[in-house]
Structure formats: structure tokens, C-alpha cells
Amino acid sequence: MDKNLSQSSSQDSITESVSKQDLVQIARAFFYVGVIGFGGGLAILAQLQRHVVEKLQWLTNDEFAEATTVIQSLPGVIAVNISCYIGFKLRGWIGGLVAVVAMLLPAFASMLLLSEFYLTFKEVPDFERLFRGMTPAIAAFILVAAYKLGQSVICSLWDWPVAILAFLALSFFDFGVIQTVLIAGGVGLLAFAWKGAPAGDFRSFTCWPICLGIGLLTGSFLSNEIWRLLYVFLKIGAFTFGGGYVMVPFLEGEVVRKFGWLNHREFVDSVALGQITPGPVVITATFVGYKVLGMFGACLATIAVFLPSYCLTLAVSFYYQRFKSNKVLQAFLRGISPSVVGMLASATFSIGRISVHSWVGFFIALATLVVALRFKVSSLWIILAAGGLSWFLG
Image 1 (tube, helix red, strand yellow):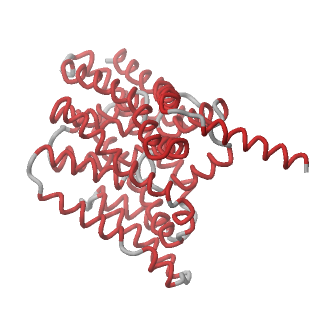
Image 2: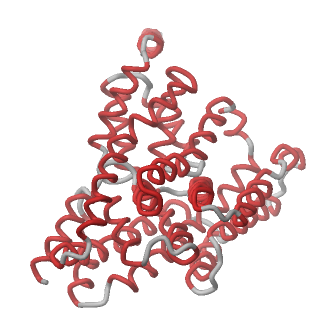
Image 3: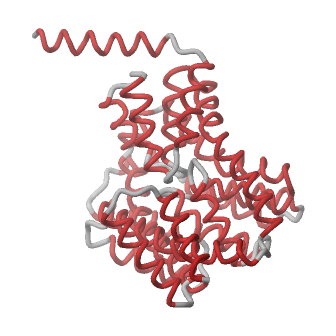
């Protein structure tokens, strides 16, 4: 009984501390996480848990774990979605907005500076040699992400064919990521129906994935460059399930093959820049926007790529229990999970063909695989070491 009273008292003290937070405190806390948030979404998630839960005690560990489980079902970067959720829990929608903006500001500013530097000096031989070593490491990192995600999501008879078909569709049959995601979600619904789902669950699901897909596909008729940029990154933000690396095949299809905003070399280098800045890898959107329309394009692309997940996270925060208990919606998202593994494998294949074309590139990719799988080393140091090795070996 004393233990229960102690737990209740602890929970009350956390609730009281949360209620006293103002927007400046929220901004300061998430800006700090944004500054030290190297290593991608999961590394930022660990920093959030350490700073917001353990140090500031704005959430309990149980609340943080439960929110992570639900929020990771949404598109976008999980660390950004969790930041929005925590900010919403503290001060409503404005708290969510302040948390997301504060956390992304260091990454946005860093990427702007690096974009200008890269676009000015990319033809300098030494600079080119540096990036020639970084790109095989990027391919290896994406393969590691596919492996780790596959360990957690490929666990049934339905999953392997979905992952393999997603890889083949993107690598050899010129399918789009949207079509792949919607088909994979449909397979998840079929698997759910096969197990005998109640009809009421399907009625509550409605047809939002179809409506979302139709709405985004109609954007392909837009011709103005501003609208194209907005459309592309809204689409990427709405369909990037599974973390920032999943954005890579989507980005390549849109900005390299379809619109030609970047060539293959610039594209892979931009992903490398996203790795050596704090914040999520998706901040590569800032580079693309800056290349296309300068400062305005950088702001537009960055806002667009995070806006869908921000809005969806707010909606889920309002209707948390309903989202959590909707079995059909979860089945649709469950179907998408193995396709993400296939998409990551496709991105590895695509980037590997471009970047691994010498024994130095092969060695860097292999060494990155070993280090990333066996040791807890920040991706920042691995990427910089890969670039330095390539520069030294010429």
C-alpha cells in the first residue's frame, strides 16, 4: 500500500511539474536536444528520453514508452513525432509546434550553411574526394537500418513476400513509393480479414488511405516550381513510414528521376550532409529546397516534409485511445512495415551502384557495416572517418 501511495505521489509531482511549463522552457529543452541530436531518429529519441523524462521529469518512463509504441505507427520521423506529442501533452497544439520547431532549428541552420558551402565548393578536387568516401558509408548505413528494422517487423508468413516485392517493385519495375505503400497496406488488410476481422472495424476505418493517395497523386498536374516542391515534400512527409532512411528511395525517385532537381552525385552527397548535421536525416529536404529555390525553397521544403506527420501526431494526441484500439488501421500500418524493409534494401542497391565502384569504396562500405552492427559509435564519426579515409587514399 505504501508503495502505491509512493507511486501516486511521484505521478502527482510529475503532473504538477508538467503543468507549470511555459513555452520558453519547452523551447529551451527541445532546442538543447536538437543541438546534441546527432545520429538520426533513434539516437534523438534516446536523448529525448534522457533529457525530458529522466532529467526534467515531464513524463514518466511508462508514458514515454507507451507513446513511442503508438507514435511510431505514424509517417514521419519518430523523434519529431514524439517531440510533437510531448509538447502537446504539456501545452496543447502550440506546445507541440514550439517543441518541433525548437528541435529542428539547429538541424535546419546547419544544413543551410552546409548547402551553401557544398554548392560553392563541390567541384574542388579535395572536397570531391571527401564525399566520395562518405557515400559508400551511407549505403551501408541504410542496409544496417533495413537489417535492424527487418528483425523487428518481419515475423510472419505474409511479411517476407511483401518485403521482397517492395524491393523488386522499386529497383526493377519503376513502381512509385506511394503505390508500394498503398499495396502493402492493402496486403495488411487482407491478412487481417483472413483472420476474421469484425465488420464494424472496417466501417470505422473508412477509406482515408485511398482518399489520401488520390489527393496526393492529383498534385502531379501542378506545373509551377513552388507548387511542385510543396507537393513533393508533402507527399514524402505523408508516406515516410519507418524513419528518415525510408525517405531516400522516395527522394531519389522524385528529385532525381522525375524532376531532375539534383543529379545522382548531388543527391547522395545531400544524404551524407543530412548525416553529419544534428537532427533527423529527413533534413536533407532543406538542401533540395535550397538548391531549387534558395532560402524560400529551403523553408518551404522543410515545413512541407514535417507538416503531415505534425498534423497526424496532433490528431492522434487528441484521439489517442481510439487510434490505439482501431484494429483495422493498425492492420493497414502493419502491412506497410515489411514493405519499408524492401524499400530500404532498394535504396541500398541504388546508392551502392553509384558509390561503390572501387576497392576503396567497397572497403569503406564493409567497414561501416561491421562498425555499425557491432559497436555503438555515432554515425557522425563514422561518416567523417569514411570521408577522411577516402581523401587520404585519393
